[in-house]
Every structure is written in structure tokens, then in C-alpha cells.
Image 1 (tube, rainbow, N blue to C red):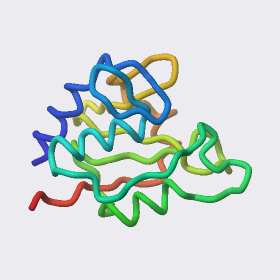
Image 2: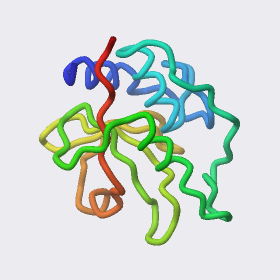
Image 3: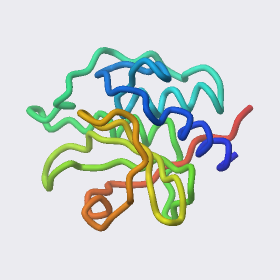
Length: 140
């Protein structure tokens, strides 16, 4: 399934960044990208998401994205291509960005404001922001 996940994610590259969207080729944010990959590889989404703001609960300090990742995905210690990466964009802030480990090069695929869905080098500055790695459930 790992290869299917990475192949699905690469199919989203070039999709414009659109907040709260999850439509390949038309628009996606980082969560929308992960939702779209879920639909392609696993099937229907497990929950209906409420509207969310770009600040991802920064004012309240609520770790909504971390809580959701932990509830719907399996935390892993040793990441593999196809695993979801959760990031804090700055020290002390709530976790609010998602990507998908694409290869052992290493690289990751993510929807990034101002850039759309791209595959980026998983450089030390990105690695320092990692909160955790999560694996999609198996299909079926």
C-alpha cells in the first residue's frame, strides 16, 4: 500500500493551494491533500470535518490536528514512504501542517500556501518541525 499512497500523492502535485479544499487539480490545503489521498487509497472519509481557520487554533492552543491524526492514523516511530508527517511551523505553536513522506531521498509532498501541492526536499529545517509520523490504516 505504501507505493499506492506515494503514487496517489504525486498525482496531486500541481494542484493549487486553496484553504479547506480537497479536489485534485482544482485546489487543496495540506489537510485536503491528506483527505484526498485517503479517499483514493482507502475509501470514504471517516469523519466530516467542521470548517477551520488558517490559524489552526493558535489563539486557543488547541492541538486539534494532532488529536485528529492520533485518532484516525497510527503513530509510528520509524517512518516509511507513504507516512503522514505532522509539523509545528514554529516552536511553541500548535501543530498545523501536514505532509506525506515520499521517498528515502528524503522528500515529502505537501500543499503549501503560495506554492500549491509540491514535492519538497525533507531538509533539516523541516525535520526539526516534525511533531510525529502517522500511518494510514490498511484498506478494508
